[in-house]
Length: 426
Image 1 (cartoon, rainbow, N blue to C red):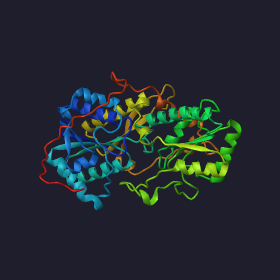
Image 2: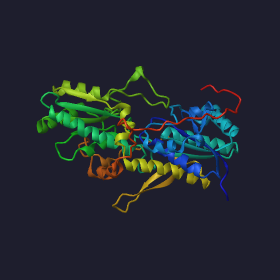
Image 3: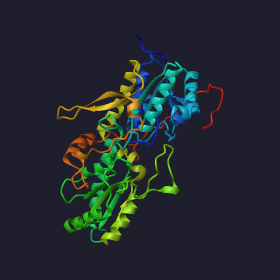
């Protein structure tokens, strides 16, 4: 049976990564090559919001060289958002609006790159399309630096942020080592609300016992002030310095984040508590309990957009899942997310793609398994190192301009004429 003909929409959601554009390139280039199936390929300007407001642009009119350049460009070139669609009962008007826009433009394929909440949105949309008998193929493309999506070995975006985190710890650790007589301890706070995969990746930096990081604090391990202070004191006794990497979501024994922004920032659009200041909270504990000076550093959004240290493996796999989503869609697959499947036949590392139901992935988080965390709860095991090492291999290709800086994609975004005849307030 031949594949259904119609237009496709590609959208990006949530926090950007160094390689989400590579996934977009995988979708776009594969779809454009199959113009007997895809009668047009559109981008949604700023994720699902762009669909709701009918702000779509024609990717087929873009310079092919600029589409290819997406593979070497960080962040979300199509535009992203944090807009939470709840269940069908609570947000039915939004879901119906999406299908109204799709019907008006004869859109029959929807490719959504995002994390847990995005997969939930895609799943609900597929459900409603089936309910009202609108032929629509919905495919999820995995994306998150947090590496907390279930049912996939790892997530595109993680290998690059892991590489960045390890390099940053190596370099800042040498800074602390050189000035330990003045700056005795350093805390590097990294992203990771409920899963500590990013913080864990700093363990790659520790090639010898004295190398940073000396302590890694994970959301999966309850933070006990007295134990932590003793661990810092022990490091100081052994190395004359202590370099700490902490996930932003470190929690106390009662399960409370040690640094909630609380009433200042509240919750984001997905209902997640806005965090900030875990590093400062830890610094205060070090200075109060251990009585030594402590510095803090926070890469912030730089850690998720650092194309200059992105992993070549990560870029290749990000493109692969985008292309695989289109291939599966043309075969009639819908309501699924592309997963990454690691070969278990040993060296060398090999990874292929699989498929998992969107409903399984939606709103599920994957913490670090206990066997990856050392018995003391402040470092990683060799099993984790075996898991993460292949993901950071290779330097991603960069296009360097005569001024010495990278060249990144800038899409023209030729907007498509609106056809629904009405504006939609969001």
